[in-house]
Amino acid sequence: MFPTRAVAQFKKYKCPRMKSHRMAQMGEKYYQAKDYTKWDLVCDNAWKTPFTVTIFFFGVLSGSFLSGIISDRYGRRFIFFATLALQTVFSILQAAANSWELFCALYFIVGMGQIANYCAAFILGSELLIRNVRINFASLGVSMCYAIGYTALPMFAWFIRSWRILLIALSIPGFLYIPLWWYIPESPRWLLSQGRVKEAEDIIRAAARKNGITPPDVIFKPEDCEQLMENKESQRLYTWLDLIKTTNIRNITLISIIIWIVISMTYYGMSLNTPNMDGDPYFNCLVAASSEFLGYGSIWLFIRYTPRRFTLPFTMILSGTLLLIIKFIPQDMHALSLTLVMIGKTGVTGAFGFLYLYGTELFPTVVRNMALGATSMASRVGSTVSPYIAYMGTYNKILPYILMGGTTVIAGVLSLLLPETKGEQLPEFINQVKPLRCMGTNRASRDGQRQKGNAQVGNKVNNIQE
Image 1 (spheres, rainbow, N blue to C red):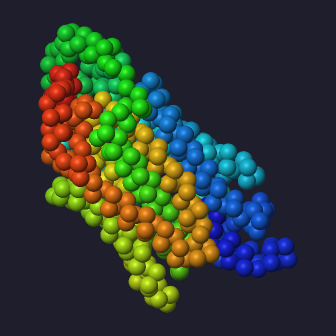
Image 2: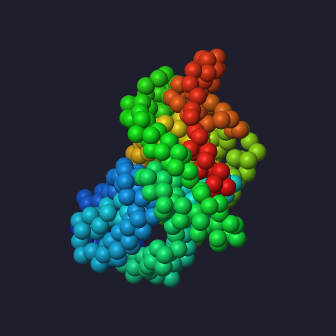
Image 3: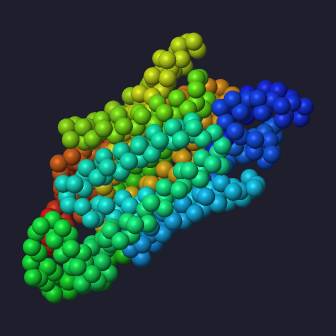
């Protein structure tokens, strides 16, 4: 929200003597950020600027932990709209904040609502759509819509220089979602898991009528529903400890956590570091946002035509290497530096989107949601650190790229150990998890024969949905 670059340049001067005049000159060239001096966010209190963003990511961390629990209990649709309302209302209240402390408290709540809203929408869409559309929705639909919003941000900010008015303008579109409450249905899969068979049937019949299809008289047979509830009651309760129970899943979990942390730190660090780059910050942000389209589009092609073990290491090692090369670019070659940064961000963006798909294929069904939640939560460690990575750029413009590039290359090399999953059956149980590539495959083959999943009810739901 505030110009970190202006703060860094202001610190070159004696703060007590030139505080108001110098800050006004530097900040108002691109922004209307008078609250910097009003809230005393300079000099000895300059640490509050990156800490503000860190508080937001702490809210995201809390929301990541709670979103899965509350959406499993109260339903995807209700949580989607409830958290959307939470995010919209508190964003507007944030624009009226009269102190830094209040701004941060509201920002924490906005972070919780934002990630909970995103997760609920992602799960709801994945459970409503058929198999073919589901892959495109997860790999392109959500990502491209995010990129569109990211691209719109610098355009809005160019015309609305006051951060308060900008925040209100960005929050108002949330009210446009209100009519969708009567259009978007609840997930039939969630309703079935709660034993609400009649409601699930009504939603499926309504969808069939809209598609011009005559539904069968009986969609879910009583024996199917009874089997579903029996399986649910007799199902073993898995815990977080199961993610480190065996050697194979423990290795996959630890490596995935490291990769998630590094990619999250690099992605958000590069996004937050755009004000520190040479040139117009609005143009730099627009170019960075535009690279999202290329990143998500290219990763979609990689998903279709290349092995998983090639996609993730290639994008990460390429991105990290380009960031490290920036150190050797002369300072007067701004265009070349910007090009390397944006290509690097494109690769990191694609890797970020790819991790969701790769994670669903690496972990077994019995702990898949829990594993994705754990790795996603771990990624928030990287995002909470990213504001300080960007803040280093106010003192040394090259240092953030060295840190992000070096860690990304190391994580990319580490990802070479992960097993190949493309075109293979998803593991159902923990003992079917594949070993790391350096540990051979014979043990996995033996373990895979020990236990087979019983997925009759799940197949029934899939067939009806198709």
